[in-house]
Amino acid sequence: MSSETAEPMRLPRATYASMVTERLRDSIVNGSLAPGSQLSEADLATRFGVSRGPVREALQRLIQEGLVRAEPHRGVFVPVLTDDDVRDIYLARETLEAAAVKHIIASSRSESAANDLDRLVKLMADAEAADDWEAVGRHDLEFHTALVAATGSERLQRMFSTVISETRLCLGVLTAADARSDLVGEHRQIATMIRKRQTDKALAVLKVHFDDAVVTIGSREEGTEEDAG
Image (cartoon, rainbow, N blue to C red):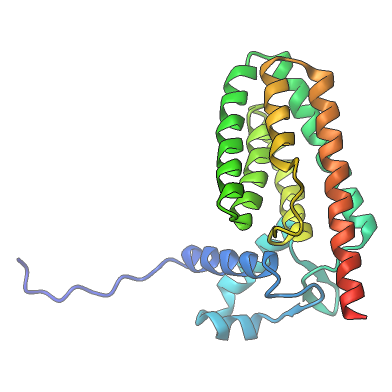
C-alpha cells in the first residue's frame, strides 16, 4: 500500500452544473421556487457553494428546457403560465404524441412499445395503490416519454423534451386531489390500442386524456385563486 497521501478528487465543472440543474429543476417542479421567482446567479452560487460558472450553465439548460425564462435587461425567472400557455403546451403534446402513435402502429414497433408502456402502467397502478401520488405523476410522464421514444425518432424526441419539461411546470407534484379515477385506466387503454394497432381508438383516448388534464390543471388554478382570495 502506498504511503503517498492521495490528492482530493476534484469534481469536474460539468458535474457541478448537472447538480445545480437537478436541484433547481426539482425546486421549480415541486413549487419551492414559485412562479415569478427571480433567479440570481450570485445568490444561487452562494446557496449551492459553487462558482457562478456552473450556475450560469445550469440556468442555460433550464432555459432550453422551458422551465425558466430569460427576460432582457431584467434577469431569469420561473415563468408564470397562463391558461393559454397550458392549452398551448397540451396542443403541442397532443400533436407530437399523436404523430408518435401513428408512426409506432404503422411500423413494426407496436408490440415492443406496448410492452414498455404496460410496464409503466403497472408502476403507476402500484404507486396509486400505495397512495404515492408523486410516483404516479413521475411514472405518468415516463409513460409519455417512452411513447415518443418508441418511435426511434431523435428529432421527435428532441421536440418532445421541451414540452414535457413545461408539462412538469404545469403539473408540479401530483396530489390525490388532482388525480382522476380513470388516470391509470387511460394509460392502459393507450397501451392496449397500440398493441392492437388500432390507431383511431388510441388517438381518441389520447385526446380525452389531454383534454381532461387541461381541465384538471385549470380546476387546480381556480382553487388556488379562491384560497388566496
